[in-house]
Image 1 (cartoon, rainbow, N blue to C red):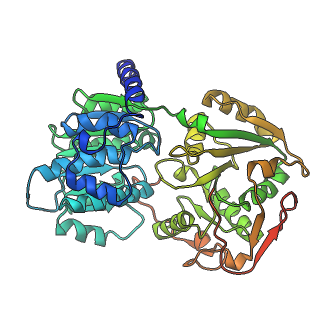
Image 2: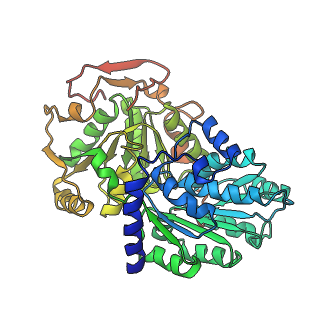
Image 3: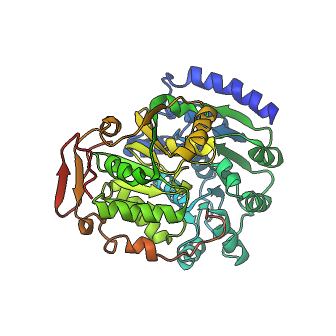
Length: 464
């Protein structure tokens, strides 16, 4: 891995020096006019640094190894050259065998990638589809049989389609691995290697990752040919854009503090270590009057999608999630991240915390630490390269309103559930546990419908 890191450091310094202030637009980087216009229609007019760095090489057909944290613009960095290459081939008969493959570690990320590339592909006369577990397989088979140019896939469900011969990878010209380090963390590398072995050896390969560790190096050395390496930031880059706090408290104070912080104006993401804790905490917040939904692997895909959409739209102002939400997902305007359960290692802390302070915005990260967790949380901070503000919490301390300013707002529990969900958090608790192999893995708050109760700023009661 040493050689790649040396190249990465050199190219990364050049990218940081040249691209953030570069006047070059997408057209200057070789993106076709139709795609530039399609980007403009979505409000995207200027490339992010990782796009400026990687597009010239990717558009030229080179294999590319790109490092950038989640939210740095990696999706367009691989989507634009991929679509451009397929469109340049002219009119090609569309079959059930795609010409481009994008592999992602989670269902949510696969769905998000499709939402980005589908309008761009359509603008160039190309058809795209996403295949992942947790949903019925029939519609995916039908979409593949109708003919497709680009497949966005989670490894397990794609292998299901390959075994049933619903599709084949023998015509793939471009293969993309997104969030490669996360796939390694989730144990998907054997499946990823099987998929890559089924693609033509001479095809272009683009690998994007937040970190370039030894597991990613295995893929690079085996499947990429003389890759150009670009790194425009590292996994600690976001820490300068956010403030980090540790609240030292007793276990009995934890719920009271989470209720107080999440009832402030704005969008909050709360992380727990386990699915059970996420479910339990979401129910407790709803019971306390906080519009909250949960996201974890025990939910059916339809509920996961509905809950995530509720959080993005503002119908729910708090998302309680396991680390399934720590990587890959793009959610605007998350001003506060709460580690209700501190993560075990610093990479998870950085990825979780990176859900806020995105695209140049600021954000706040709060870690709750009991007496037994203090040493572990201090170690996390050292390894993550941060120096959090540590506060011993007490009921009359003003710190909570400093971390999450504004009037606390509560709604009647029956009114705090987003539209389309059963009363309370019943849907989350009774959702189907079906999972597919390979994808297990602060603006103004919109009040929910129903009676709303508010608490005066400075009042330390939780309103329960």
